[in-house]
Image (cartoon, rainbow, N blue to C red; front, side, top):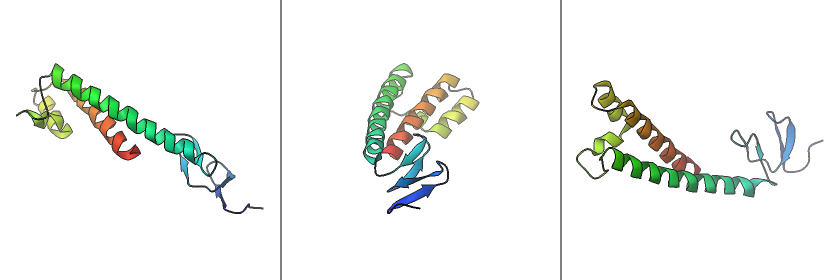
Length: 112
């Protein structure tokens, strides 16, 4: 028996009322009963990563004296920073900071 407006999730192995999708971050299906919590999760993840990206940008620009609007703006592009690291013009920790900045920015875009 399948209730009206419910769908079976093969990962959860149960029927979910008004199933939207299976969220791997939450480890459960998003449906009619927890959709508002999922929206709040995405909203707060977006706000948190936006704050983190802002703090990472502030730290990176002050520690390495590279502002986004300076002649060294190309260091903010991840492939360019990798090439500079490979050629010995950038430190490995600088590549790590740019990686974190990219991850935080991508999370803002995906959750927003």
